[in-house]
Every structure is written in structure tokens, then in C-alpha cells.
Image (cartoon, rainbow, N blue to C red; front, side, top):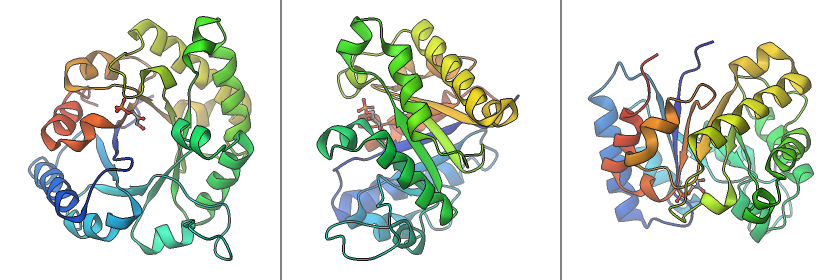
Length: 254
Ligand code: 13P
């Protein structure tokens, strides 16, 4: 089964209008110069620069996404942003359940599943994040923890078109530590088996599973070549267009 790789940049809480415009513009220019690319490119900037970034990538193949969304379509939820608003702002994707949201905002698997369901109702692609902590890995629980997150966070209506999974071991995020290729492949294959149990083999076989956590130009090729790795969710290295592009160029050809 050939799955088109997705290279997604999670800008997190970084980017003022001028630098966001420049970064997005550089990525759009690089993308336009390679119209036959064997990968999809996505940028997920903060809400405050969504419009700026949307304008900078407008005539390119680069997709626009958000970093979270609320579970309701509108209403009395001060400070929150709904999937309807994201769609209106030009987004096609939204990250849900990032470990920083799970920690900083106490988001549970049930919350993440509800966000994905509301996102799907707006035809947004939900990128559902899972991943174990360092303590969980060291105590041999990584597979079990991730399995439970998949079962609890992925909605029954998930398809290979409306959902992407991102495996991000918490201990590898922003630390420079990367899971070994064997560990990454083991957990990605296990995620696909869990998805097959939940959603059926065809859906599992078609669903993209990204790796995230200190992915850089220097390690991307090895990670992206793994059988069950279908792209990357990139933090720090997504803030430099040349690094982000170098990672994209490390995708195996289809
Ligand atoms: P880093 O690439 O900075 O480790 O961040 C990964 C991440 O959290 C992407 O969502």
C-alpha cells in the first residue's frame, strides 16, 4: 500500500506576522518549484498569523492547518477557536491531542476524540497525536500506553482520508533525543494493528502515521524510509524553511 507522505510543520507558539509571512512565503516558493513532489506539505501556524500565512501560501500546494480546536462549533467559550472558524480561515487540517495540549490543558483522550469528531464534521483532516512519556517507556509501557491513546482518541468515523496519526514520544520532543528506527517502526506497526482492530484493515492500511520528535534533516531520511512511517510532524526544524524543505526532500519516492 503506497501512502503519500505528509510533512507537517507545527510552529507551536512561534511566529510574529513579519517572520511568519517570510517563512510561509519561502516554503511556498520551494514547493512551487517542485510541482511533481512526492509528498504533501502542511504548515500549522498560531491563530494570530493564520490569515498572514494563508495569504503567503495561497497559490501553492502547501496546506494550512491549526494546532488545536474546540469541540463545539460556536458559543460561550472564551479564548477558544472552533473548527468552523478554522475552515473559514482556510484550514484543511487541525492537530489534536498534541502532548503539550494534553499536559498544559489537561486534554484527555475523550476530549481529543471529541475535537476530531467536530473537525471531521467540517471536513477538516484531524492529525491525532499520541506518544508515551520517558517514564512510561523506561517501565516498558510504551506500546500499551500508545494503544490506549489510539483506542480512546480516534473516533469510530475515522477514515484514511479524514485522519492522520502522529506518534510523538514525549521525551523526544524538542530534546534532540530521537527514538531508534527499530523502536519507531515497532510502535508504528503496532499503531497500524490497533487501527486495524478498531477501523478495519483497509482503513488502517491507508492511514498515514507520522513520526514527530526532534526530526531534523540529518535523521529524516532514515526515519521516513521505515515501512510504517508516512511522514513527519516537525517542530523546531519547521521554523527554518531550508531545514523543513530538506526533511521533505528526504521522503522516499512513491
Ligand atoms: P520538535 O521537532 O521540536 O522535537 O517538536 C516535535 C513536535 O512536537 C511536533 O508536533
